[in-house]
Image 1 (cartoon, rainbow, N blue to C red):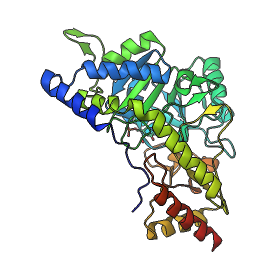
Image 2 (image 1 turned 90 degrees about the horizontal axis):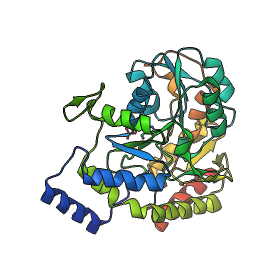
Image 3 (image 1 turned 135 degrees about the vertical axis):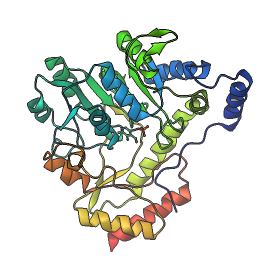
Image 4 (image 1 turned 60 degrees about the vertical axis):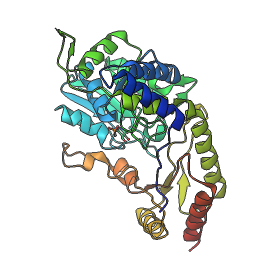
Length: 358
Ligand SMILES: Cc1ncc(COP(=O)(O)O)c(C=O)c1O
């Protein structure tokens, strides 16, 4: 079976050396030297002032919302992985979904504006597939109403827009470093910000709300370990090479697939992208389901990222987002990861092209 994603393998010599260091020093967790090194290396790579390494991307979102004292409602996208909206819902916030712009993966800024009221405490936007949508409009909207903009940048590691790290456009941005991501620490995540006050608050929130004997705020255990940091440090130098492989694989798909009944995503010229997913956008949902079944039969995994539209899930207040609901039925992601071999990719291409000719 060709998997949808294969986790990147860290450099073996480096991981061995870091694990030996952990065993020798006995420093396993609690803001140790490897966590601090990873945070400072990531700050350089991501072009932001402060990085807090966390247990995972979901906890990052929860901490980000806590750090801005979110209450009342937040406005978010119905087109994302469920963790985005779950994080806000878990904190007892009223999750309001703004439907997407037509022919886009991103919520419509005007629809978002119509949902804002005096109880709105954040705009939470996913950089879905590492793309940005009308990012500058979200920044303006947040500024107009003086509401924090939180970016769920789980897919956007290393992406820059108009020469700036995508994550720097929000007051806060949250990353997932789950094993399936472009950069990973097996499990893990990060919150990034350029605001030193938010950084201090997040530092306390992440660690039970106290530093030593000083009990400073509410808090949870959102930190991550030296072992997870070691997996990140043993990979961080490979990210550029991995992005180049992803680009090569992307370009070959674009060149070789006969786009019949579906189209690839478009990459805006001012976006330096990370080639994290290869979604196919179908004209109709039945054709997408048929290809999914066909690929499975031929030993190729694919996935309906992202289905269903989040507004249709039972844990949220019912709302209607017809554009998102339609889109969610028409997208299928096919295998796209740095270690995909030439033989595997050519088999995938031949299989899909045979199917579309039928
Ligand atoms: C958009 C998005 N947000 C949040 C998350 C949650 O991250 P984690 O799995 O690290 O909790 C994911 C995970 O895949 C994601 O895709």
